[in-house]
Length: 70
Image 1 (cartoon, rainbow, N blue to C red):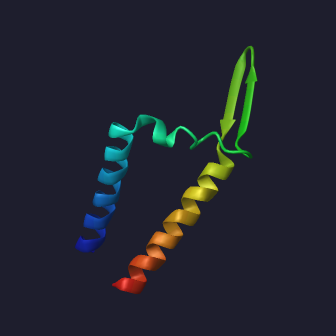
Image 2: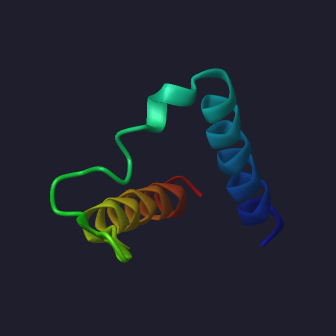
């Protein structure tokens, strides 16, 4: 359990460093084709369905690789 928490923490730190030193590197995330954006004068709605599917696929691949090499 401890190793898993350390790996998760390292991944979060790496994402934070990437975002700090290269702020434009993740501008595409949340603006993928398929993400639903509705802007009306009195209301805004945003549902990042494709972005969340991408995050889910990436996390599943990372978890499977972690279990394979453990």
